[in-house]
Amino acid sequence: MNPDDLIHWLKLIRVPGMQAELLALLRAHFGSVDRIATASEADLAAAGLAPQAAQQLARSDAAQLDVDLRWTTGNGHLLITLDSPYYPDLLKQLRGAPIALFMRGQVATLSTPQLAIVGARNPTRLGRETAEAFAQHLAACGLTITSGLAVGIDGAAHRGALKGNGLTVAVCATGLDTIYPREHRELAESICDALVSEFPPNTPPLKFHFPRRNRLISGLSLGTLVVEAAIHSGSLITAKFAADQGREVFAIPGSIHNPLARGCHQLLKNGAKLVESADDVLAELGPLAATLRDRRPAPAANPKEESAPPLDKDYKMLLDALGFEPTTVDQLVARTGF
Image 1: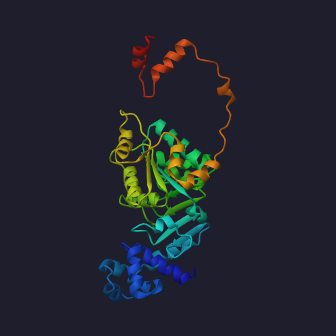
Image 2: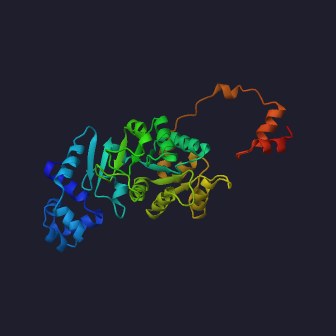
Image 3: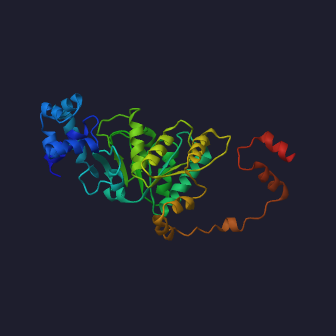
């Protein structure tokens, strides 16, 4: 893309409400992106652009555009516009698709089959381990794991994909010159596959940016897996986006005593696919699953497990008393008599 065209796109990206449908209407009126970007405020208003948006486009901040332009020249930095052959097909199908994506990483990653894994920011230890294990296995099977770089389940999903030597996509709610949350800077640096945002540089982590990010997480993916989520959570917003976008929604059930399982249970009541193993996800992804199943690595042998001595009677009784729920010492005493 030549510098003039790039500047035109960067001007359009910063216009409030500029999404694929609005761009199509303006193109029908003006004929091309360059004519839209160089039109007068009066002409833009006559074409139906809201007054504030028309004013911002016609009076673009040259200093900010220079910052945006310099970001695109960074190593591994890309601007993927709607006209680019690298713009993800699944995302292009969405109502309200962004007109461009800022990206750091390998552009081919966006065209790989993706599964979103999302969940609570303050998960239980088991939830975190489950997300990481699922991501590791599914990434090793060939699915790209997509999430939002948040603390909790998101971070566990990214780490699991990296452990599985697979691909992972982090969709950000800020400009890519800012890593949020700060504690995930090291994780972000380890994600060489794709960091993606529809927000230009210098965009802070504002509250209303996160639902917009969530629609991209689900929109890039064939399906969304929710590991743990409270009833009112961003993860359920992502799952709703996935359902509205015609994508699969998966949920892992949990204990009825765990408040972070209630969101998943609500999804299951509303028709989400119940997931007990990674194979449940692969099976629901149709023809793709068959291809991926053939690529799964054989489980590694564990000689220590195979040669482990049987538990003595007291230890077995104690293990049985633990069950599958968090259990207090007093409960163990009552159940075992020890």
